[in-house]
Image (cartoon, rainbow, N blue to C red):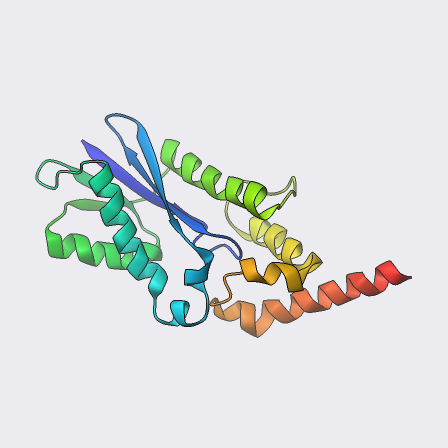
Length: 182
């Protein structure tokens, strides 16, 4: 028996992030949430998303009745799990770094996209479960259209938001505003 653990949204520009768990033998999937606030200001500087991820993994494994003597974990290789790997090593929990694909990846990415669509109101048809540059720019463009109302959803602890992208979003917003007046 094994459990898979994956994340979605931890590297995306806006919104909460999610940790997904799949118990392979039953097909049960559960989720835990990393609120966007963890990716801002002092929380980000103090590595709170990484600390919180350990708590969420403990909680998820408890809910799935994980037995460290009989089971192993397939753990996504993403850096959000760095402290989880340390915790597993300290506790003698057997795990294997893995590229998570299939049912769990689809479910956790779906959870993230549904959060963006139905909680934040991002309606772009180009918003998909596939992470990467295309999704980044869908999210960036959404923020740029109304930056002063939407910036609260940005993971503003990310260095490049503050050094490059915030200014570009403001420029884009102002350009759009000027165009709409003409």
